[in-house]
Length: 526
Image (cartoon, rainbow, N blue to C red; front, side):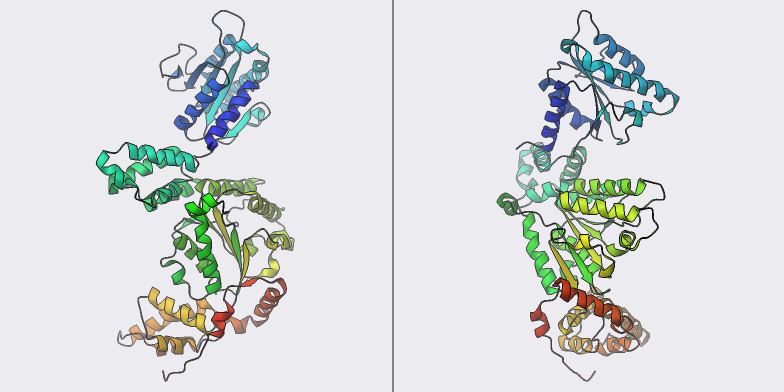
């Protein structure tokens, strides 16, 4: 199977044969990309490949000095122009320049850019036997505006799964024979490859080597943690540590949780071989405080993949065009990270300007358009989960079929779910009560949201601690709830509109009817 890098190298070979004089390759991985560039040059019929950087000047493929030009790029351009002219000992050649983007700034940059533009115009007309081409390798995606019409920009991709697999195999092959067998146990090889997808080749090799040194085997969890550095470096997404306990820490929502567990199999090697598509994501709409955000955090734990939060509000900028640039950069990071959960919390607030005519210069509308296009066309394995409390503020185009795998409605917890929420919260705080007492306490909280019920446990713990540091009882929890006026009473009209929307639009209930039917009320003398 052709890897992304091999496909890119073939594209560059075609560009060189078509006499594109200046190519602008964006990458942080000089060593890995240069190997593919050399193959592309050879395939295009350019026998001479030279490198230039500000440290060693011009060197041959083996690193030896080429005695052409110097550390000054201006002299190198003069040498390129000379070799493209008539004379003896002329041959087709490609010049791979590593640090040239640093010479584009200031007064010096004016002359360098002008010389490069002149070469971009002159070199395509040189006779084919003396053809010369320039490939600029740079980590910066900012192309000077003067060059944008004269260079072909190529954003080199990170290693795909096949390339990462080759890196993993190379790391294992370098081990002593007695360690190779246990380096990647059965079932761990695919997990180790998936964990490194999104890293550069050098980062993946370093992570594998570090894991082998520390534990004598490839640990997928340790490798995946390296992605946290990638997120921190780009500063457009926020890394969240997954929720301890996973979906078990979320009380109720049995239909939603069952659906999420079923979707996990789509990431297995068998599903990939079968051609099963990766899940796109889901939208959770409903009552505030009923587990929407908690579920988003729990998915990453259940699936064993990173959790990234995209704060659309934080990506906005006061400078024209910078908000869109930040959003596009966030999309690139998500695609590069590979398999992950992307959490868009309270999406209706971030996109309010797109539907309510906010005076933000059209930033919200542009953001909505960019998000919709990305969700429709993206090819990666990121699972997007968005939450919303006010469905009336959501743009209709965001809700249409095909944007999401499923739109879920999260209602106030029923009796069974109130018991589950209370029990999960008690476990989180290291407490356990008799099942009947938990059920009896939960029966007092009809109309409470999950967050309101969860907040009663720490309140009750304060009361029991103040009362002689005794053990927590169900009565403490009931007492804590007596002074709480639930959201179902303070915002009854809003919740009624939400339920009306759910019935009208057919959003799937996150709680199954069977769960509701099993609800019972147990009264104890607390």
